[in-house]
Amino acid sequence: MANTSDIKNGLIINHKNGLWKIIEFLHVKPGKGSAFVRTKLKNVKTGQVVDETFRAGHKLDPVRIDVKEYNYLYNDGDLYFFMDTETYEQISLNKSQIDENSLLFLIENTPITIVFHLSDPIEVRIPTHMNMKVIKTDPGEKGNTAQGGTKPATLESGVIINVPLFIQEDELIRVDTRDKKYIERLK
Image (tube, rainbow, N blue to C red; front, side, top):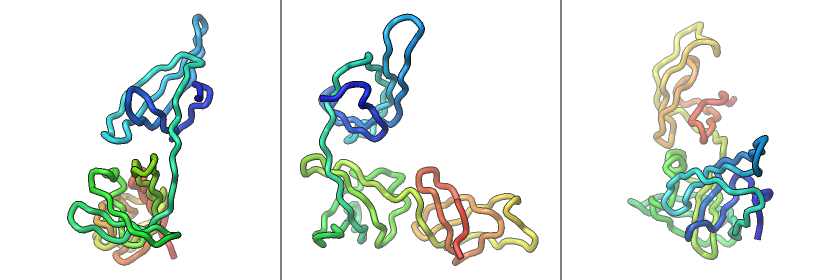
């Protein structure tokens, strides 16, 4: 058993007959009264996000999870296939088991992490920064610099993000997958 002092982002707890992931938390010590912890919890199965407040010292039931490295292979309709990088065994996950943001950046041979509770996959984690090729964008004009505006660009996974005006088609760029933002151009 753990208590509120053990809370951290990413911790998965058993709460109200379900698995919940702590997204945000804030320890609050008011001038009068006892301390408490304000949290934002996300249901691992349904994706529902709720705000929950725990008294200081409240007992929590953390869940033991296993993390394994996989490579994304391909998808066939609603099934997505992954290969274990150690044993070369393949597993398939339904589209509903994968976060929508993660689906936007999945391309063949992407190294990913799958989180398991017992033997059930509960979360697919993609890298926070990925190198991707620009497939389609408007041509840039001579003289455009990094301080200029932005334009939409379609990446190899199909996602559309805003990039600086000097980015051309077939260039490699680094992308932040959490915010869907351009970071830098790669040489």
